[in-house]
Length: 238
Image (cartoon, rainbow, N blue to C red):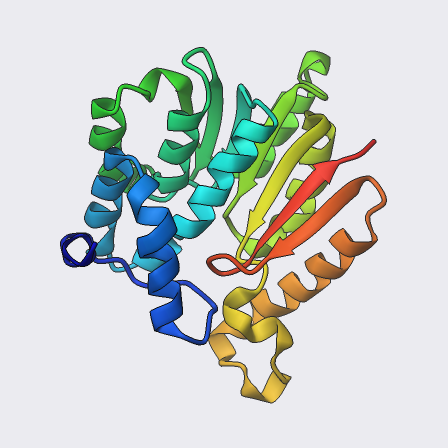
């Protein structure tokens, strides 16, 4: 496992105070069960200047379990980057499963696309280069899309999370799951305002308000898990 750590460098997004403990979690649980295409994609992404935007591998492991638990076949992903979470989903859902993947950055997606193709799962993916709200609104214009999605993952602009949520709740079936990434925003949600760097304050405020909203939303059951940069798992109840 030490060799694997050297071969696949990955910047840490974990909030655990002990780097050694986080590394233990990765090496004892995550890496041994991580499919080879995902290891390869992490390695390719690690040299990207925005590598920290990628989904943390331990968070990805949790996503796979959630996808299996709801037996997901029809999913949607908002925010793709190089495609780690997208590839994780594509490897997990059945061969006839489908993912609508939305991102404005085609160049980042194309970094991971050769690995996705080599893994044999590109046919499951419908990549849409666009802002997400128009895509979601277009889906909702067709009544058969309402209540038809099993799973959604959101890792995009934080200021629009509430807008995404209102649309995704309509698209998800009862019992379906939507996962929001970065809901602890590098731990700043619990910091005094004066201790937060200026470039993190806007998203910090958005995330605090979004977390409050999710906690009071009677349509969902939630769990805020301290994985990666914080993942809030929402299960539609009604």
